Length: 281
Image (cartoon, rainbow, N blue to C red; front, side):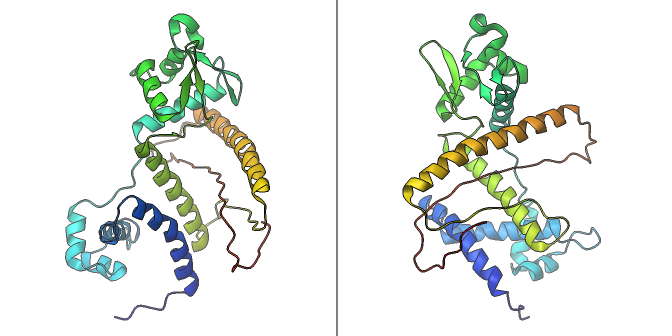
């Protein structure tokens, strides 16, 4: 059976999207063979989960027809239970909750978006201590355990007065490859889902906008980087505060529960002299 011709625009877009992913794989020793096997699993899993007819799981033959994966491999991969979209690790979700409280809730912040330096011990800071912050979110884990992990990841620092300072106003590990990889998968997945939804024209589009300029000096790029870091973080913190307020009063059923991801990013590289200039939003 001959495959229909693919639109050149989608081929070009996919090639561009894959370049940074291939760059990462080559740096981390992921060969084409390993990735091809992984891609087979994903093709089969997506076809199985999302391409059903009348809510009936597709047969091995239909999945093979849709994906181009040999039916023998389809049968093997389906017996391995497929590839589920993984949630963020528990230490990351707990960390995000703690940072939200630290940056939005008195007495842990001076005002929303301005977290205070917290005495490490409750015996020193009482209800305004790092121990109290952790206890407010979870009674199953000690403050010292969280602190040691966050010091390892570079999320906080401890000063000479034994006070804990938040290094970034969002739980983004500065160290710890596994933790950063978890965020990489989560954020890139959700951004791609929004973009694919918009490209597919299925329902109202998700907000997805960016600006592009290609004739800036290094000094101007650094100025813009600082503005994005400052103003962008304030925007995300405001959205986080509103989300936390809404979630505290919402009472959806299990079937109605929805999650959101709101992101903002900045990237720069040398301009390709062969590309035509396309400034502006």
